[in-house]
Length: 296
Image 1 (cartoon, rainbow, N blue to C red):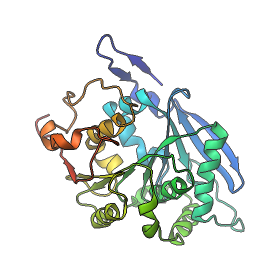
Image 2: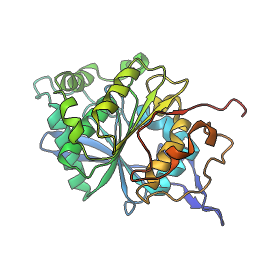
Image 3: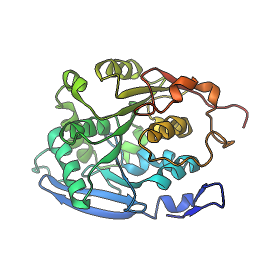
């Protein structure tokens, strides 16, 4: 994965080009069909599981985050990443037969559990985008030890959708449209949650509403300024500092250049010092605003 330790500073150098091609692809057979999983990094490290939104796969949903060198260093330095791609959303996917049963959201969550069993994973961190975040939340209700940052809501890009098999996307969309309401049960969700939402996202108010339904001891909201719906692609640098402190709460993050990168849009003045204290999960439930620096 092009990971190497720097001398003395504990910094990590990541070969960005190899991020997109260095992973190992697996086709995992589950009781609800096969699912593609791309694995990046040292499997002896803690696991980070990702799940994209409708019409996207791990490359189109998370490449901005992984091509951001500081974020890639943060993630690859601390985790082995397991990218789950919904059936029919992988690159070059063939059309799914029309008579194949459409999975429910419960089936999709069960697939996640079976993927973890396939790789022998126990406790995991999860990163989901919109529909993917819903699936991972549903999964977390079954596997209560899952922990996840959740990105903001997503508007799928039409050009990306046109490159995919429309009927395959429709199957995932049908499952999401038939999802059951988790609002009343969110209070019982004990896994710690970090929610990212773009300040200009049309689902901004929905994200804020969601935080009122979650247990305040386990949830924090990050509002990203000058950002729309797909935070992982639009403003990946804005995710750095909140993710660092979120991971510090678990002892999973070893600082290497905290807030010192000239490419990072974050600075200590963007976030109140009391919010950066790693109490319990490393964050308190208050809106944390991040911004893009203009003095590159």
